[in-house]
Image (cartoon, rainbow, N blue to C red; front, side, top):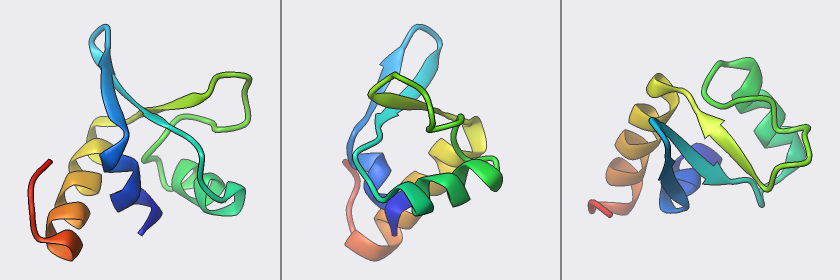
Length: 69
């Protein structure tokens, strides 16, 4: 669900997609280990979403929330 919620806070920066990282640290670490986001343990307030992470986040959000944002 955290990956789906990250979809709500995504934004484009340069050629990449980022998301605000105000979620549970353990969940964010698991997403990092699965290759969906960049390492959340840095000073930035956002993480870089991988291409597969951004796609999966959108799919999960649409599946569980029933709409596109």
